[in-house]
Structures are given as C-alpha cells and as structure tokens.
Image (tube, rainbow, N blue to C red; front, side):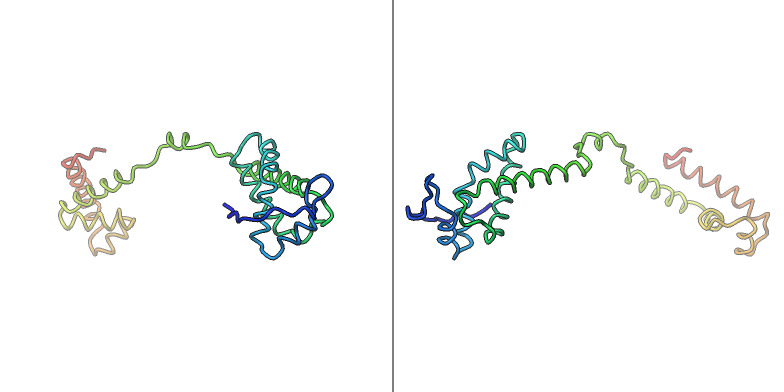
Length: 199
C-alpha cells in the first residue's frame, strides 16, 4: 500500500481556466520529492480512476485497487514525460489502467483455470503407511525362517538370480536350490498367514 504524505494544495497562480492546476505548475511544486509526486497523484486521481477501473474489472474492487496502484506507480516512473501544458492526467492514467486490465485478462486466459480442491479431494492417494507396515510384516516373517531358507530367497527373489546362478553363487547343487526355494516360499507363506497377511 502506498504511503500518503501531506501535500499543500496548489496556489491559485497555476490554476487553469477550468479550475484545475496546470501540470507545469503542479510538477514544478512536487518535483523535489518522489513521495510527494506519488501522494499528489494518488490524492488527485485515485477516486475517479478507481471508479473507471471498477467498470473495467466488472465490479472486482480488489483487482481494481491493484490496477490503480500499478497505474500510479507507472505514472510516477513516467513523470518526466508528462506534457506540462495538460490540464489533467486522467486521460493518460485511464489509458494505462485499461492496458493493465487487458494484460491481466490475457495472463488469466493463458493460465489454466483453477478449479479449487474439489477434484483433488476425490482423487485416490496411495496410503504409504500401509506399504510400510507390509514391509515390516514381511521383514518379520523372513526373520522367522531358517538361515538356509532366508539365504535361498535372498539369492533367487531379492537378487533376481536364476536357479543355476543361485546354485553357482552358493556352491550347492541345482536340485538343492529348487528344493530350498519350494520349502522357503511355503514357510514364508505360513509365517505371513500367522501375522495376518493372506495372498
């Protein structure tokens, strides 16, 4: 939000025939202090500009206030370009405000519309806790197996080795590997069932 400092009203010497001070006189009086320029602009043009912009934004007051503030900032940055013989900045400010509204609309149209949280609330989310608990139960069931059965399941299932590769790695016959895998899987199934896990 802009800070508004006090600024004395212009004297009658710079008043135009219609009662408005000419910009030449106004700019000369406020030029030394940027804050005074912004304050004077704001005080002089805020209400009429806001009324104009509210119509442009279809009654959206918050958006209109943002547009007016941006317009005032641009006016302050462009104060060197003002025509000192102009009676009013309102036409220039209105043009700038209208362009800001048009640019805002284009940005909003280019962005996908936000739909709120409705669709997200109904989207199924995987329950990570369930997977973690499943891993703990399987780990506990594996601990209940004999060392030979754990070793054979580690080689064939966890390391994804063929029966021949597991036999070579463990230094045991292929037939022994097949037999151990069969009994190890059977023992693991029983251990899981004891813990409440069924296939």
